Image (cartoon, rainbow, N blue to C red; front, top):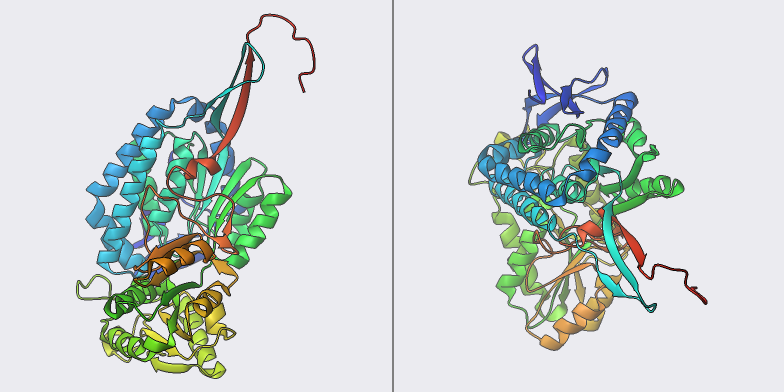
Length: 501
């Protein structure tokens, strides 16, 4: 049974509750359109009601006991099958992802492969959910720890990586023995439905994974505030994340939040400028800048700034915009009209604040792209640290160049941000590299490579306003999705005397 149904030639996406695909009773319907060509309608989203979200939570709660009692290696085998299904269906999934979200086919294939790698890693974690034995200070006493699941976990995910991010939340949650309510962004329902279809095909039992496609105001609010939801894993904007954190904290549940970034790449005077330009361009314009780890600020030492900027502008102007399904396309559109208009407002703010616009700055004039949300790769020079475009996350193909006199000023400017997700430095100087590693205020940093990128088995997450709670990915992921239980076993066979603390 499929997660979509045709009605009057339109596909309607359905929720998945207790192992069954159920069409929402909601009258709130939005179109799912291709951002590269809005005439291409993929289907219709009926936004789930509060009651439907509650049904999903209660179903997950009932399924928890049996799922947690399934041996962890058996849970891992299901996740391993899911990972293989991702690889087996990579091309179909990549084409759907490109059509729905707008990224290039190469980027979509990369995201599917990364998700498969994450599933493979977390399947293995099912055999490594180890605690530790600890020597007691008391005789004939054994102390040890075990990891246990939390219960119902909500996975609330964004539209920019609608395969990889759900997979890196759902797979460790399931491996740990939790049941899951998955609420994806309503902008990417088709790929979300396909993911759940593959989880179902892999053998996840009814109730252990439930899909609710709905708005944050109704379905999301029910999920976040329901007492049976013991943890919330969220990726999205700071405004929403902080509000959710307040709600979750009030009822004593756990929350993991991965939110905004304003990621700097520092270019020193000894940098390989070809490498620096390519790293900056890839970080700023890859995925249309719609990544939390996208390069948003290039902090460049004055000595090489003119040459760096000249090369960067040529690189930006050479990029081919278009439908991501065209293999020649290097950059796709913004995901929807709202995001498109947001990026244009930030570009206008940059102009008004006095930054020097060197290229881009508007939608493309290409008539062949007139039905999509395309914005040219944009570079601003002589940006000051207090300007709006230097401080706020844009989530679009806009790079701000800030000029500095030396390494110390570069580090100070790089750290002058409320965010702390990712960073990079381009230099050959080992002393500066290790000072940068020590002093940069980000959760992830790259040396001589873009601010973007990460691996399935390596933790990911940010500091300051970017991150709440534990890290995602790698072995660190299980820290969030489990509780640590401490066990004392007294095998004296009798009563102990004296102070036992």
